[in-house]
Length: 475
Ligand code: IFM
Image (cartoon, rainbow, N blue to C red; front, side, top):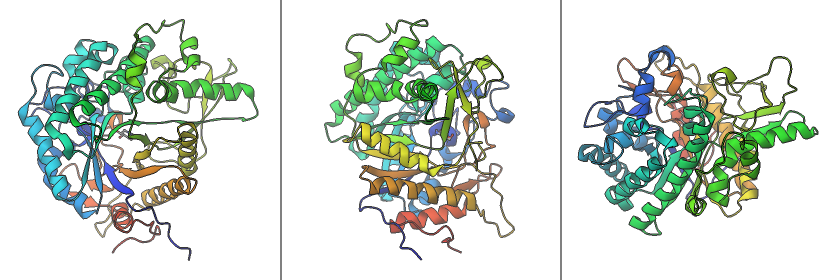
């Protein structure tokens, strides 16, 4: 038997959640409505009409959830603050009850020996701000900075890492271009404006957090970076198709944040849509703040080729042009079906993609510390006769991706930690409660939490700092 892989001392093992996906308590404690309340309550927008009204009822059960986090032996817990819970309208009055909720959670985590890793925005924009244009309105970026400042003042040095935004690609492109996420708009120019205002919001917030907490504050941004490969690597057309897709998927965020510039090709290819005058003088210095850690969310890979212009166009990424394309400036590309196996999301499982992504980030940004802020899989879990959830596929997924991460570490990539998505089964956005990502099962009728085998396996990983065999599940 080979020796299990061990991780460096101080490597952080955590798990992640997001406010709208777990909290419930949607109208309690002074919380205002968010765009996801509006969207999920609009008929036809989510599977089975599911909403986050109750979700995992974490708003009432957070103490029990902290117990699970503690018993899992996690070093850190990544959660998000619901902006409309702490500032119901997104500007103006703050809500002391909402702030107290997160303050209590943070204290309980610290008491349990768990580092709080906060995300300030995981998609639940206060509806009032959306009514004024949402992320397409520059003012939203300034409102976000004021909210970030107040959170830094309230939660202060108790927070280990401040993540400004989670996956702004989804906020901008799924929210304003393809419309499958809240607020459900399908306008490419609006989406490009949203991209920029999210990047600006990030930079402004980092400045505010550092202003309040000083340079010791650890700041971060989490991106869902896409691994996109050419169908035929020897085809110039396919390689060019990858570049176009990559610029809207990755470059539109990595560029302004880490390089201080948007990809020139993206600006050029979208010149018929907009002159990008929403990028004002000085903005790119604001977006380009040094980052203590870049958060990377990784799930699967994509393969593209240049569309020949006739015949049915493959769109294995799931978007339909008729409903609005998120691939702005990459109009003539096809997303090809990847070989399996697949998760219940239909996403292909390819751990090598994680190694490749980390190596390529390291090549481009050698001095940038990284953190895997999400990785995990939805499967059709079943409760067995013994009352347990033997989620072998999830155990294998986590095992293989942690190994893939280890291979990147072996090659010198500076990755500081890994967060399994997700701690709990939860509201998977447009898929409602149908897709289960948790390492802990949630029975939505009773709110009973049950550790799946993956939770037992992950506990062993987190407490030993070495990778258990997939069969190493406590009885
Ligand atoms: O559930 C989401 C999460 O909110 C953001 N990253 C991807 C996860 C799985 O789709």
